[in-house]
Image 1 (cartoon, rainbow, N blue to C red):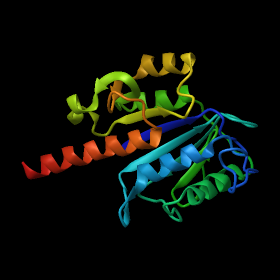
Image 2 (image 1 turned 90 degrees about the vertical axis):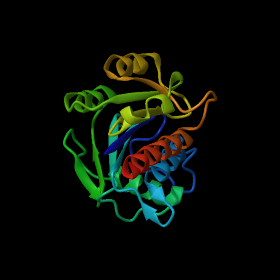
Image 3 (image 1 turned 180 degrees about the vertical axis):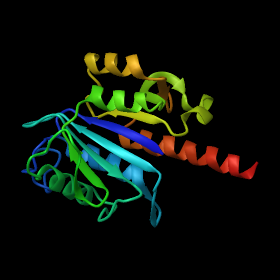
Length: 204
């Protein structure tokens, strides 16, 4: 299983936003929707062995974590509006608490922050990787990233405090290339690299 944590600093934490204006009314929720599509979609199929954890930190009830599970996900289509509708439905639930609540098949929501997510993965012995331009080249550690947890920021990146938390619990920083890329593009590149590793192991 590969897990992706995507941090949305402005992404709203209530369901009252408009699907017609996710960049504005939803605090750049469009970025997170593109990340969801990059995590799960293949041509005419979905990836089943992946999860995405959206950490929403915007108004007015932060923090919220929405978890998408590829094995159980339903009603997700390859467009931003479809992902946005599933996020909206999750945030519209009453009494969101520290315990996960399922909103639709394959989608859960709870109240949790970054340190909670990191500690949960670290306690399970998972390798945690943080994407940064000055990190180690992904292709130099390709075997080591299998079953990894990958942390990406939105258009604002990570704050200094968030970086300190991540670096304190992560296996290391990784890079997909020398240039700064959008988070959804980074996700596609790392999954492509994992595909290449898995095919190579199968052919041996």
